[in-house]
Length: 245
Ligand code: SAH
Image (cartoon, rainbow, N blue to C red):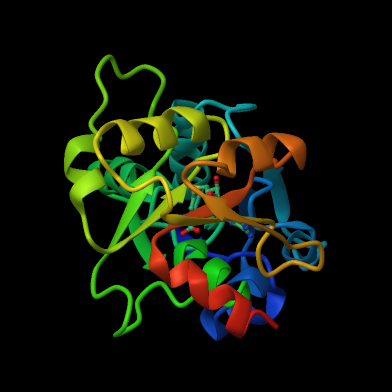
C-alpha cells in the first residue's frame, strides 16, 4: 500500500507562523524532506524519530536535483511511508510544489498540500510594509527575480511590469537585482520609485534596506545583501517609516 505525501508550507521562518496543521504533521511524519529555506528555528523542531533528508536546494546551490527530489518522494511513498515535504513559505508560490504534486499524482500517490504563510506577504509585513493600501496600491504582482537558468528567453514582460501601477514583489531577486531594476527603469518606471529589500524576514536577524530604483543596487552592494530576501517596489514602501516595529 502506498503512503502519502504532504506538501507543507513552513511560513517564512518565525516558528509561530507555522500553521497548526503544519506543526501536527511535522510531529507525526515518518520521512521529512527539507531544504534550508524554512530556517533554523523551524528545522530545529523536526522530530528525532523521523528520517530527515536535507535535499539542500538553496539559492541555486543544488544538492539534489528537482528530478532526484521527485524520485525520492515517490520512492518513500511507495514504501508505504507518511512523507512530508517541507517547503519555505507556501508550497505553491515559486516553490516547485506544483511540479512535485504533478509527479506524485502521475504515480497514483496521494498528495495533500498544506498552504503556508508566504514570505511574499509576511516578510514585507514584518518590515512595516502592507503590500496593498487604499492610498498607495490596489494591485500586487508576485515576480520571480531569478528565472530558471535553463530557460532561453525571459518570461517576464518588463514593459508591462514597468507600467503596472500596483506593488511589485520580487522573490529570489538578489542575484538579478541589478538587471531587474535596470529593466524597469529602461521601460519607464520612475527612478524615484521606493524600493525595500528585506533579508531573512520574520527571523531574529531580519534586515531592511530602503532606497529607490535609482540607488537600491548600490545600497545593496554596500550592505552586502544576501538571499533569502524579498524586494518590494512601489509607494507602499513609504509606510515602512511609519509602521516598522
Ligand atoms: N514558496 C516560498 C518562496 C520560495 S522561493 C514562499 O512562499 O515564501 C525562495 C524565495 O523566497 C527567496 O529567494 C526569497 O525571495 C523568499 N523568502 C523566503 N523566505 C524568506 C525570508 N524569511 N526572508 C526573505 N525572503 C524569503
